[in-house]
Length: 152
Image (cartoon, rainbow, N blue to C red; front, top):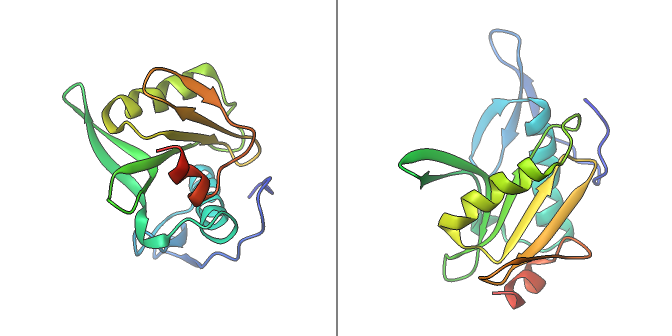
């Protein structure tokens, strides 16, 4: 897999019966296919937990939501201590450019969840912004959990 612009993470890997490589997702407590996007997700979640102080018990992968009567899934959602959405993260594979289309996707999810912090990453580039209820402002860096709470 492609080296990322994130700290190294020793993932638990295995081969399934059909020979596909799987990674253990500690947030979902199950083995999942190791796709390029999953490679980014696992590294980024580890970064949030270990370097940015995000609590594991308030962080979830593949969170379902209803958008215009269709089911969607947010890649990662972090909740505040009252279980309200605090941060939404959207991942792309390292070869996928972060474009306006990606920001539009996460903004649509946020029209339902109303989280104050949105993060987009392809493992190479990472962007975060603050949503104040009226508009978005880009942040200089990925906020720590404590800093994200201050934006609530």
